[in-house]
Length: 501
Image (cartoon, rainbow, N blue to C red; front, side):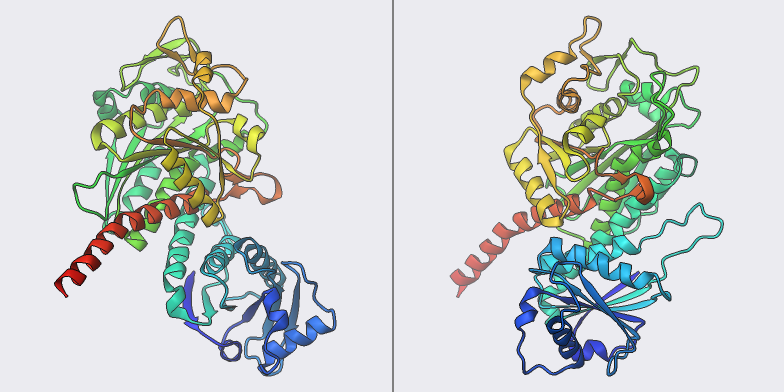
């Protein structure tokens, strides 16, 4: 989908050649300058006076062939105080009003002088509600909407926010696409090919197979993969936007392309949704798609350990002990707690090879996180206060929120084993925390955060499908970090110019 930003008045928006026009109407417009006499403003003001449209965000009024308006369909939609949350709701409601009739291939979306955050939310909301999965359908119904002209009061002041939102939308869509694909269409090898498709856009990709992984010593990762006929892949992505000497941020995404639970077999009900167990990996791919488009001044490494967790004759068994890349031995009490096994080796690899400034792993790790936080916020664990605050702020700003959870040392007691350095599970109590405590053993002194996205990575029921979270959070965090790093340099440059003057 092609998004375009343009400086437009309501009158100019009404004159564009398009199938439909969405007019976002904030509460402040209820008191708009009465002297404004363009057809959209007059129509909207009269509709409000007549009580034909409610005041709550998402309430809408549609018109067909409105005199003086070129787009054949117009939807006025209330967006309350113009906040990001309100415009997300309004945009989704307006599109729902449009999509049931004739296809909309071109759309004018007028947002006026709403804040930059609201503009971003509008773009992301429209991209989300118009997305269509088609990859494995014999008679697909692809997205009809092809072009969106976003009209604002002053394009120059909104350009940066707009471009960031479009890049995040593309990244989120890539994440949704790969998480939605059935496991036989999203094997570790195919996931590696998806990563390699990003090469040549400022991103380098390296793919390791079983022999290379065994040579490195990733015994925990190998243990999970050994029950499947699909060979594992360890995918390494590198984006270099800053000087070589600047340590990177490492993103590690859980890439279990299908999770049966292994020998500790899951119940049959809803097991099909375990294709979503590589959503962490998909979010790393989506984040790199956004980086390729935005080119921020930051170095980022992406690591994706990808494999299936199957109950084959060679599968790891409950009670087996394996040696991780860190040298720590692990007693595998439950083979369905496999995500932490592949992540612990990836975390050790990131720390040893790249000496990152921070490590963030992203994983559909525990059902316990769904019980704790539901489907609104991702679980956040962090060893570093600054990292935790930055991720929380990024999530709030991006409309992709998380909630910080505890890492008290006492929780780690549950992971003790008489047969290995650590057990991979610690019982049902505080399962989301003990999973994080397991991972913490492998991060050393590098600032580390763990995002458990089990409740936010996909939806079940009639709206079943991947959400593409937490791509918005991750991209916002990386852009904020790049901006923070650039600020001292800009200040120094200004000081230097003043001294020379």
